[in-house]
Length: 461
Image (cartoon, rainbow, N blue to C red):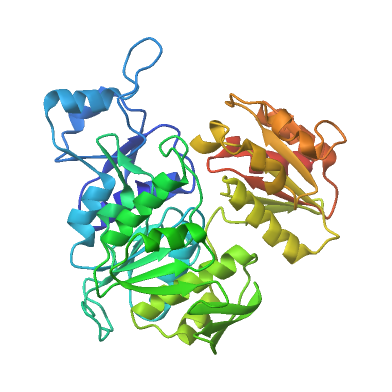
């Protein structure tokens, strides 16, 4: 929603927004753009008299324990019969129409892969627009409209249409539109990066998510391209259900695009022939696969793999993706957005590969996503945290016993895992355990109570 606000502002609209507990980097970006942020969802905001209210999917008709509305502003909008729409619908009607949309979907890696693809296209002189659920360091902002006309048209249908890269989320659109967000985007290039069970608050099982991914595939035109991870059985099932576009696979040894070499320096193979080499600062097999997905998608709009690989050599990743926040007393503290067990595992595994076996990794995490809060994947946590030497879990707001879930690791002082119900106790546990040469990775899809700054401050004492 913050990125959407930035696009509306760039298009010349006056924009205000409200939310609860907005935190950096998005809060900083919005204020820099002159977009007023209002804390809370009070009905008094009706006085702003906007032409349209754009509603994010955090808003609902929920009631508080005392029976009052959780979102009074929404109730007032409905009562007054004022115009409102969803974020994805507004995008479809006011930004994406007439553009060649490249949509990046998947359970993991959407933000990073979308950022890679936008950077590749930008480096190729295509001046793409983009909307990303994070802040790519190469751009310093999460959204822009891009060129109104494509600088270098390609010899494909709609080859002169300007390009727009969008992070395509399978989460539902709004309380009044329960379709996945990505069905609104109508991509001509659709990246299916991976697919696992997630969002347990809205999907009953993996099959329900596969059905939504198939709805996305249905919207790709015959001249479009579906770029699919050849390692994922779930995506094979999605495509087997029906596909009416060209399919390009990546990842597996029999895929159209695959890699040879380690994640930090590898050859890009296209249909069995080496066509490029990527040498960059990123770690982890997951980022190697993200790179292949971005290269394959860029290839569809005329960017050669060699040019794409050259751009990735200067790719700086995204804020809160293994972002080094500081080093104190020889202890490095990182911030990472990982929250799904697989993402925890791949993040830690990537760091382990980079550091080798001698350095210690301390994983500090909070199960904050709706799926993790429900405890749907708690049994996977010991596996997810296996690459770390020590693990520290923030347990506030959980209805399940984190210590019991982590029991296979050993829980308690002097054990591999510890839990704490508040941030200060968690910080004290980490500081007591840390020693020079350690790497502390804080993982959450929220602000995590400012733990990064608190850790650096405590370590400096």
